[in-house]
Image (cartoon, rainbow, N blue to C red; front, side, top):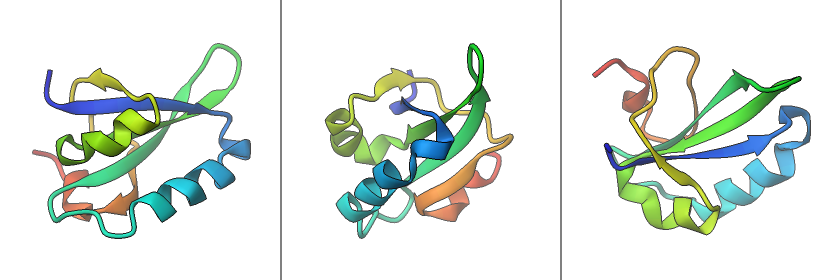
Amino acid sequence: MSGWSRWVVGDPMLADPTLDALRATLPAVPCGEAVLQRLESGELHCRLVLYFSPGIQHVAQCYGAAPCAAPARDGLSLITGDPALLKAP
């Protein structure tokens, strides 16, 4: 594993309160760290998935995020943190 984690938030239409709470939890993300998001195909509808970089796993654990490989950069956008993580390694 790469130290990243993944949390399936669910329906993106209902995610705003969850994302607002997350942003309030992470007012200052350390340099080189980020929370990224992507809409991914679900069983019936698309779902919002958040990816937490290795240095903020303490926050990821609070949300029940599961360990995962580093996400592919296609389709990712920044929730909070360092935008450099959106660039290909």
